[in-house]
Structures are given as structure tokens and as C-alpha cells.
Image (cartoon, rainbow over all chains, first blue to last red; front, side, top):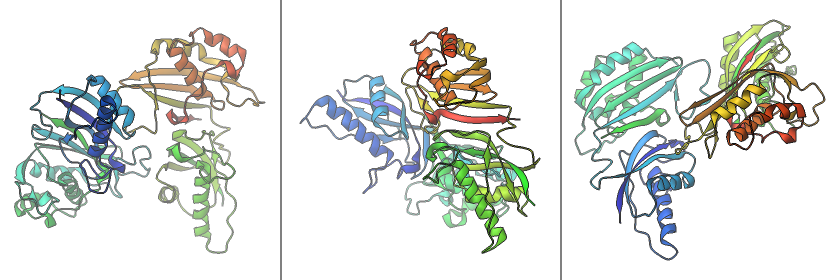
Length: 255
Length: 255
């Protein structure tokens, strides 16, 4: 009997072309999960018995190089294994940069993307005389420390429900680009500057463009007050650069 | 004029054959530092002017694959650059897995190895249903959680001044194998088990053999009380396995 499973997954996105299937590469998180799950079912069924096609549905589609500490996904599986055994199988056969942190039965109607009500992303920068040796794959190194208060002033204007078309990396986006940012927190700790974005949903590259725009503000190249006009313009070319993928991490998905 | 410089260095030892020069490889931390410093002096001197041979003296010789958060070393340099400029040059030209965290002038008589009075090493293990995706290069994964109290009981007997020959990886060690362990702390936090060793000096592989022996005790394969006889035996073959290099990190050198 097929049942619906909810999985929580961490990954170091460095080696991957993002969450979602891509043509011509096996290096996606979704692809790795589906391959290992298909292998698990094939081993259960025995030689010569065909295995139904699986689809692992993710709560979001992280870009190439973006990390996750708690991506949520769901998949329909017909397996005799219990939840712990599915988790153990996955962790044994997935590469060391992908971990399944939990596997739980869930309601058939649970859909990790459609049912998600919020997400938290963290973006981490580093600026110091020393280098971030031990987390160099997870931080963006800045040459200069941005002004935190200027960035917080800009962030305050970005909070709330807005049309974030100016911060959307997909120029052909035909659906609504209205999203609600519940909160943006910016914290400095030693050489680290961490941005936390909590919202009901995020457009393609939205967090990275927000960070690029906030950094430009922190460097004095933009005024915090510009954010209001920038939102109204609905023009990606007026916003800041797209901050590198490596600093971004999906921290939480809410239901 | 040659002056003595004290450097504090972090490195991810994964790619390296340890701190010390090895024949037939450029992949040592000492070698990388000396190469970049020689290049710095050559650029200052100008083309055709020979540069004197440099020796970067480290407080200790970490094994292949072992990490450091604060290795201390010293080197005599004749440079017109100030301390900050030397640090900036090193961090620019060293690979991203080696960072120079500080550069300071120091007394001519300062010798990072001979003057060291103590060191702190940390050994990190991980045991959980999930995998340690983000620090997988810096932890040793255990299949089973060891009993912490048994390990602490054994560690209590290892503290103090002892002949640690049973815990020395160099069977031809002709010098004294007496060392003082000021403290051994063992902490469990979530899936992490962290061992901290504070001593006046450490023999080759000593921390890794101590950890291997403590883990065997934590798994019930040894009794904590055995430690006294083990120290007295002075026989490496009676101690436990050498825990993998990747979990070990030099945290501090004291003067």
C-alpha cells in the first residue's frame, strides 16, 4: 500500500545543480533522493519486478549551490520498511553531503509545497582579517564590513506584503509576485553578518537579490529610503546584485 | 633587519600531509606558509635578488588530516611590510583552507615549540540518525553512542603526570614519554561527543590513541580501572585503536 512520507533533509549544496531535476545532470538533490528510494524499493521487490516511478516533492526549489538544514519533502512509497528503516537506508546510500534527518508517515493530503505556510532562509556573510576556514563553503566573504544600521533601515521598508517583482530573478514570471515578508533580521557577531528572512514564500533568487540590495545599501551605494520606490518600480534591473548562492541556507519550512 | 614574527594559523587539514615538511609533497601546512612568505620577500626584493631560506617553526606537528584553530608558529623575516600587511598578503595567497588569524612582532628569543607550556586539543565525534552534513570533514562518525560516564571514569585515571608510552604512536621514541594531562573533559551535546585534552605536551598520535581507548571503554570493551595498568605497562599494543585524524583539532597553544 502506498503511503505518504514526510522527510526532513539537510544538504551541502556545493556540488549540486539545485534541488530540482535538471536535464543532463544527476547532480540534483531531488534526483539523488529519488534514485536511492527507487533502489530501496527495487531491492524489496526483488529482481525483475518493476518499480513504480517515484516523485519526491520538495517544499521549494533551492538554486544550484544553495544549502538546506531542514528542507521538507514528501513522497508516496509502498514499502514494508518502518520509518526508521527508511531513514537508515537513505542515510547509508545517499552521499555524505545529503542527510535525511527525519522520516514520518503523514496524511495522504500532505503536500510539502502547497501546504507550506512559511519559510526561513539565512544568508551568511563573513568579513574579517582572518579567513573562514571551517565554513568557507557556507559563507560569502565580503571585502568590507557593511553598515548594519543602514541595512536594518532598508530591511524595515521591505517587510510586509509587497509585490517583489523587482527582486525576482525570473523575468518571465507570469504568476503573482506578491509575497509577505514577516520579518528580516540582520545580526552581526564577530566577523559574521547573518540575514534571516521569514516569509510566506519566496520568488526565484529573491533572498539573494534582497541581500545584494541590502549590502549595496550597507556600503552607502543606495539609501535605505530607496526601497519603497524600488518595490513600486517592479523592475529587477533597479535592484541590487544577486548575492552568491553559497551563503544561502534554507533553515525551516512551516506548515 | 630580520625580526621574529609570531603567527596564529587555522587550517582544515583534510587535504594536507600534516604540519611538517614531507619529502615528495608540497601539501604540508609548513610548506605552504614558507612558500608564500618566500614569494612575499622575493616580490619585495625584486627580480634577481636571492631570498634567504625561511623556516616557519610550529608549536607542534599535527598529523596528516588533523585540523587547527589556533596553531602558533614563528618565523624570522626581513620585510618592510607591517604586521597587518604581512597577514593580508598571507591570507591572499594561501589556499582557502589555511587562514592566518594574527601576525605579531615578538621577542627574538620566542620559539613557538620550545616556549610552549601547554596545548588544548579537541576531538569531535558524532552519533545520530542524521548525518553531520556541514561539518563532515571535522567529525568522526560513530555507529553507536558510547557510555559517557564510563569514559569519564577512565579519563579521571589518565589525568596527571604519567609515562604515556602506551599512548605513543612512535615505537622508536627515544626521548621521555612522560607528560602531564591537566584535564580531560568529555561533553555530550545532541549527537556530538567532544573530548578536550589539556596538557603540557603530547606524544605522536597520543590524543587519537587516548580517544580510541576511551571509546573502547565507552563501548564496554574495556573497564575504566584498566587505565592504571595500561599506563604502567608502557606498551602501545595494549592501548586502543588510533581514532581517525579528521576528528582532531588543535584549539590552543599556551605560553
